[in-house]
Image (cartoon, rainbow, N blue to C red):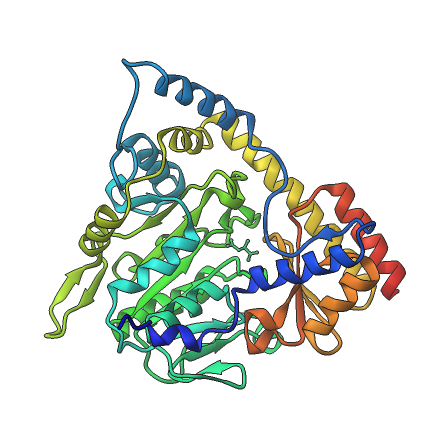
Length: 407
Ligand code: MLT
């Protein structure tokens, strides 16, 4: 008899964003004439930068000629892309990351989900609340949690991010082995200072723990004093793995390209307490289960590091940040306490009551889709998240509709 992985039965019925999409589709069916404006899932709307399109076209043409055709590429990514990443994203900012510590992939969602298979099932995992649901759900699937009750899985150490702590969780009160951090944060949009992040690095070093640092939104940081990478901090290369994505920084949500940095100095321990290289383990996993990102996509990603590509990507980011400012101002004027939006495409808005009710009200009365905070964890229950990824016209109209319905 074939039996299932019982841990899947502990999961909530469906993935947050699929659940929202279903509710929105049902509402649209009931109101076919309403033009719904989606400020829910963080999905980009502006086209790819011209520099990427040109590189894409050129690479496709190369694939059409016998002399420049390419079959399987290196699983970890082509050297041209890994070298550009190492130089521009790390070495130029003083972080000693080399090209062979970069693993190119098709998404940070997959990488943050897949990385946990390198670790034993009996480690203690610390997960922020609210949180990008992938970190938690993949640990549930792997059997690292108990059952779900009152909005919490037993066995998980929750790192609460609330208004009281400025949405930066305190260090865990009990020992943990694996820590997920994301800054600029999804969903709250909060940022962390160098000094604050250093306390996490020091904690991990003192406790032989590991930090999984999700920096998918680093491109939105405007304040140069904030860290873009955890590897800008002392000693992080021994205790951290970082995830980056071109989805939000270059408009690649539909193109798919991301990367994970696993420094060679980063260790976890075997059952006898002997250090083991996480770089070697991830390399082994990557080459066994992945055949690399397509050549034209990697060329398009490389183009983001050219002078034109950098300028065009910056314009994209500024466009979305201007949307974020509009949203934050409008919601603040309506009397809602807001965080995020200044170094992030997300605005985290304190509602007045249950977040799913707020979601329903926004959809019914204004035809605007948000993400209910409860979907990100118990601490999100009183909040909603609005995303700045949409056209200026749609953001302006959404704010106008919200003002009319809620003002
Ligand atoms: C979000 O809306 O939180 C993100 O778009 C989800 C993702 O990047 O997978």
